[in-house]
Image 1 (cartoon, rainbow, N blue to C red):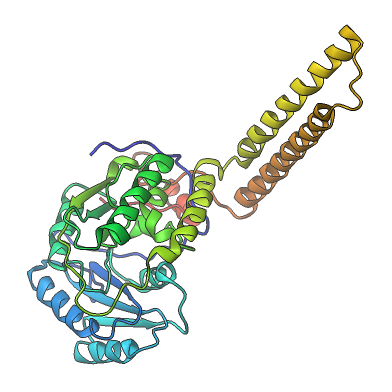
Image 2: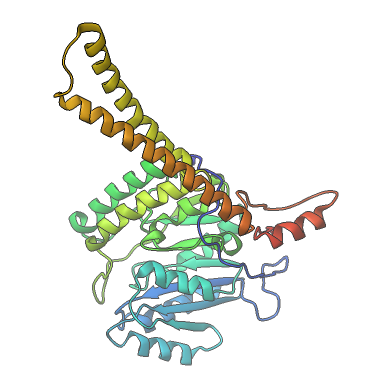
Length: 368
């Protein structure tokens, strides 16, 4: 699927990367798993053990070593207890992260990603609506086609049309229009990531919906693809992350647009607004000056005079704000050692020197 471009900048707060080697067959070095499966859960006590069983059955066909990480997002039911049972039944395969309270789906997903040890990370919902058997196929495609993200597309979605599907389709179109990353199903949690790239992104608010966009700031959009996946109706429990988060998603979309497009040069964002306001003010004051000087009309009691002065003041304030944010951005990049670019690989003369420099600056080299 063709992908539209995005600015090559780095989203806020990159996490430190962890090395994860693997041999030519794709198996992890020593006890290090190749694949980490992260599942955030909230009040899913009836789904925990069936999910763990389904994942283990699906991973029987996996040629790679793997681990399952269950994250309890401060559940009020017996989800944590069921997760403990799943870990106890398979301690060599299943791990758990139990959060102190409910932080939200995005934070729970980030907690699991931070715990993941694999060089490939898969995420999925804990409601049994995703099919774990899709994971092996998607991981194989990610590795064979050298992708950094393979997103699931629930083309035959088994949810209520008016309450779930229609709002999701409208949200997807809005996100595509704003971000330029052309995917059909941003809301599908079943995604496969190259861990070294994913760990350059930190998730806040409801940002898990926009992971493809954040990924496009640290890798080429051409390395982001989607694949159709199975989807089942919910059998146990009810959705915990529904329409109530719509406002949060809209606000996160605005903040994400700002960081993606203007993080390295915030002065351009505020400067454009300031120049537009100042232009309107200049036009209004210029027209009044013509009336006063050219026709001798009285302008002191005209509302347009106050409006023109106000727009000029607002324009100057926005321009000054842009200058301040430019100074803050340069302080961040220079004092923190952050860079406005990321290196995938260094070749040729001086490659080892460049690699060590990039590693110290927080950039990652991607093994081939």
